[in-house]
Amino acid sequence: MDRTGKMFFDPAEIAHNYIESGRKKLTYPLYKTLVLSILAGAFIAFAAQGSNVAVHTISSAGIAKALAGALFTTGLMMVVITGAELFTGNTLIVVSCMAKKTRRLTMFKNWLIVYFGNFIGSLIIVLLIVYSGQLDLSGGLLGGFTLKVAAHKTGLTFSQAFFLGILCNWLVCLAVWMASAAKDIAGKLLAIFFPIWLFVTSGFEHSVANMYYIPAGILAKLNPDWVSQAIALGVTPEKIEQLTWGAFIVYNAIPVTLGNIIGGSVFVGMMYWLGFIYNSKQVPATEVEDQRMAG
Image 1 (cartoon, helix red, strand yellow):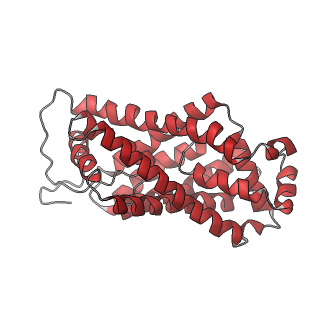
Image 2: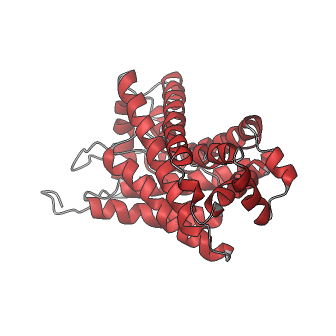
């Protein structure tokens, strides 16, 4: 609660605060943006791995997805509260761009740097998990499950991955947008929990989360015991063979990333710009805080 007695920003204030917070993000020096994006990639990878551990022995798909969703929320919570830089959340910088406070080229440059940093952070966790022997859990069943998840994701068609990417980041950016309304940590955590839980339970596709899920599966493919466990879980040898870096890029990373950009920038950023900023007078926020547009 601030001196006005308000415990949150109203919707119009959130939209106008995003104009300034987006502009500030684009003034960060390169090293800061890169370091914070590496951290965000690692945080999301931690959440992805924890979700896999929790559900790899559960046969009911619905229960497994619901539990995974509840745990995965911790990833975005860590990103938002610590001020890390996540590509999917940074699609909301479009609000500042639409308000003519930032240049499109500068925004695209930020997206590229953050995307690259997220990938590095995710790969660090992938390597640590795989070579720590963590995937040997349950007699190697976790390794087989990791392979199964990766094979499913690279088995999507381009259009499926694209549309699932739109749906995902629509919810992720809503979580970040709602969290920015709160002025206390508890409020931010609560706002993040439900939209993220919903997107994971629904099986939507998050480009940064997949930077853990799929590379982990590609490396798990090198272990014969984990491959055997994956086959026992119903993954065909053909699907395992098709699990490659090329398939990751072409059939998942590209369409999901494009979908994430549209889901966050169009269905959240531009919509709220039209709803609260376009042709409206500036709403003075009673408290200007550094909004954490991560997600």
